[in-house]
Length: 215
Image (cartoon, rainbow, N blue to C red):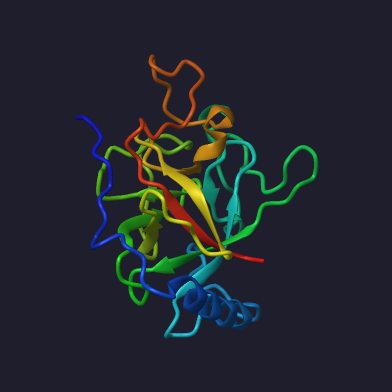
């Protein structure tokens, strides 16, 4: 079955003044989160006030270029055979990942794309509605127990706010999220005859996603 590109739940157009208001909410949520504990032992904790369900603590893996949650125990990176190696938040030259934050569907902004989930097997983020996902640990990603996340779709020609990073891309092979500008440096758990190096790929049809980050 041919993979289908995720579609926005509603209009992807940004709201007027949106970046600033979200930045204020994120700051408040991050401050509350400094003292928060895990909601579930197997699920990343939401660091937020009820009015702003923003979960920080997500990171960019310098091995595979995917997004994952490092605060929940062992992870699995597709750079290693059968996922027998962990994601890395630090590059070979010592540069650390930014602290990224995701909105949950329960109280996030309108106009974002729903359907994203955390995988309890590899700790990565993946798009659930398409099915046919592939986890570095083998088989499909497992979103059981995950919060429901939503991502911002950036329309062409739009500039994101100063607390955001665009360029994040959906991989049509594994359904994960990776940083598109480093696609040639990425690794996907799915080997394809059309991609002998095993890179993630949006296939030229992925949206441009933007993530919040905590400075």
